[in-house]
Length: 595
Image 1 (tube, rainbow, N blue to C red):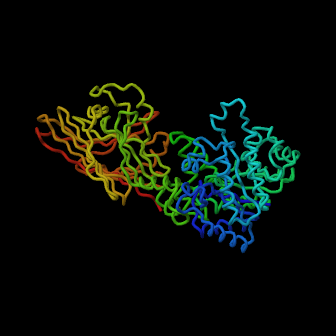
Image 2 (image 1 turned 90 degrees about the vertical axis):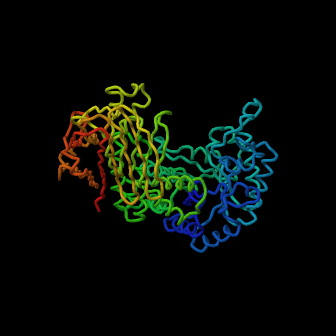
Image 3 (image 1 turned 120 degrees about the vertical axis):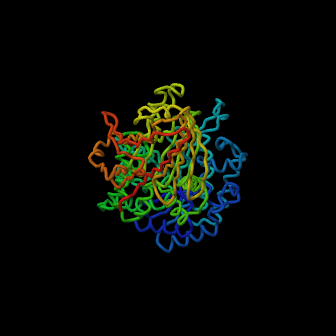
């Protein structure tokens, strides 16, 4: 018996047609039974305050059962009588604020009432009743007479007897049973024990044999939680082998917390092939690579030197997929609006998963302000898969500028904000902050520049769904500066309008910049093209970066390089200025993605 345990409650609230497609997906890939993980996704009177509005009604469940019969797959039931009941306890605190108390008469009556209502419209043969990862309430553990394992087993026995009297075979998870081995003598043998282990155990799964020798019927359970990454699939192969070896009655494949139906559409066929022991296709192998690198990315910081290469591998692999290709490309690019649209098409737009994704999608084009390290103002602009942060307190420093898998300017500031910084106004107060910085240079290109050592004052002038405009101002004894940043949703990159008002007669000044390109990508030197003295162009992988300055303001670009840095610095055209004379310039930073 092959069972697909599809996470509905904690992953995505499938719409009725998608629920049926999921059952058919299971049937088409050699699964005999479909077991939806429901938690609070079933409308019972005993849990109605905990249910989302889209929870499955009794009539819908009957309809799903009829459809399952038509296509030739068995529909299993699910109801957690103990363990994983947080959503219910939040709505019904009288049942227990920490966890269910199995000795409570109130909890026992709630369980019986819930099962009775479920059985009034459930006509299947098997029901998973949970029992896993149950943490006994603190007040009970303080009682030396309380035996957690025994209380758990006796409580479950009540549910087991209730269901078996109605010709329903309960399925209970193994882990609490193994935590309290004294329960082996107590738990009813009328239940099937599902032994779940989602990793390769070098000694196999002898727990299946132990359960059988103690008189229990068993199911081996494995998982495709992370799509179909290598580690999970190796565990699934072992589970299949151990199922045969110890004659377990079936094998269950779970999909814990997977948010997207698209992932299951590729992962379930792979699981089915492993259970049938048939070769995988090139599409399967590409999806395994994608899932494996995606899991790897979730476990390393974005600042890791390995992150960039892994991100490139993820996007390259996504583009090789044929099934659900657009979805996985969007996933690799962190395009939350595309992911949100896909989610809404297949699932109901509610619940914690939807809310989290919706919040991310809102920030696809956004300006966020916060105080880094609790004190330094940080403005972060997000425009699709492009993002950068500006720190006006440090003479206007732009950091962590990246688009897709390309890092343009690294996050130099992250290791310095928690350290003791010099007061503003010194020769090198904030020079080590680095980042991309405009400069108002006097007499010649200056590094460090005094304007970097003083804070700017920022003001948001415009923030709409299509454009963001922020103004930054600084006044020093020799100059009043104004930078105006403009970001538009319909293009990537940004524009800078710069304005300087000279405050010292006959001063010679010009706008320049310091642009520290990602240093470990040293081949950028060879790729850089100086098309004109006022246009800096770089071909970087899938992107063309074009940074343009008016010809009247640019003398050219100078490469400043060392062992740990590489900066194509703008050399400005200097002018002698009268007191009060204004100099303005417009800088255009454009990013073009190659098709």
